[in-house]
Length: 317
Image (tube, rainbow, N blue to C red; front, side, top):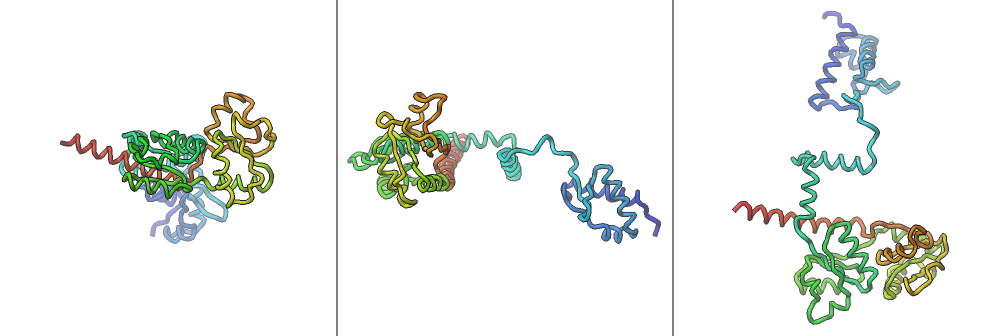
């Protein structure tokens, strides 16, 4: 066998790395065989292999890690700094879309059509204005539903309200699931009972064990409902519900945990402006649990995809 030197080993490994990266059989960060295995493959001693690996390291093809081995470097450095979590998630989504045959540059239009091809109507049903506002605002702002409020008592009317009759979906909370389910069956419509984020409820329960916790709301019917909701989580003796235009909001201690119902946001912004909400605001930009959000999005996407398919069928005639 002809004598093989460092350069020949380096040339072979270099070509193997370049070809492997090009056809996708090798990836940046992948470990090469150890020096003993390479020495056996090329019929040389390990010193020759190490000299070849140092050459490749100097050329930027690999990196040598003491007591660990040689690792393939990516063919080009990462552009800029690492992505934030949201950016990394977006790249992963785009790569997955590409694997399904959807060009990354078309993803935004595909998502838009999957959410906005048709106006999907939701009727929000609750027993008080504060929870009605919360349901309707999150459905509209986060998901794009066209929303209308319906008081729970209106379900008992002989003629269902117009909002229910023209809704694609009825939405309530678990407390009123039985009444809404009966109405949904009578109208032949789907319905969803919203669950709240467990971390928000955990924060409220923890706060109640430590001292006063305040809620700022607009409807006196919200207080007994809230106490009913929170009683399973622990004692509610520290719960204080203050209503705008009825109670003195400035009486809230500066460091007291304070939750503001979305129905009160506009009033507080006008009254307090840059000073901010009384107390120590506990912000929760979204109230729906992840499971509820998934249900809502599945319904929304299903309705829009059906509209897209119907449009394609009509266009193909």
